[in-house]
Image (tube, rainbow, N blue to C red; front, top):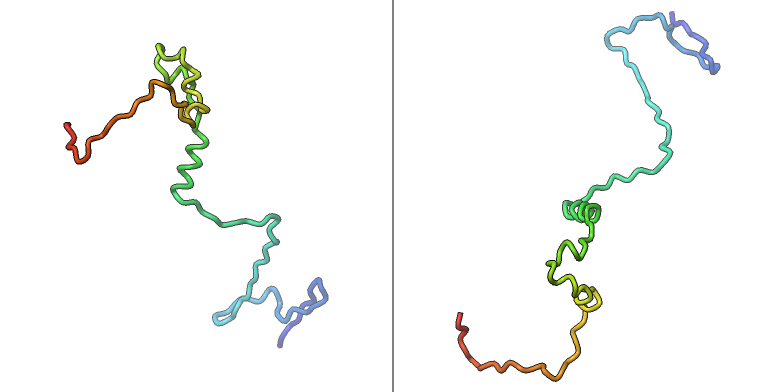
Length: 107
């Protein structure tokens, strides 16, 4: 004889909760997870990307006084980025170095 139990939602349970589970019985279970609040991206980085990020995080520009010898620090304007990106104008004492065709290097 099958007993029926009334559940909270008005449905009937065909088995009594006090019945023992026997060999061969099957139990069905479902786990419901709430939807995530934020989208998650499963991405990874290459070693070169990690190295580039570490370089940017640890990079500190060096001061002129720590990289240029003391006796050259009076010429600070000569070490500026603007002068580095362009060649100086030609002057009257510029000279040409004549190369000898098919010459062998001496050292």
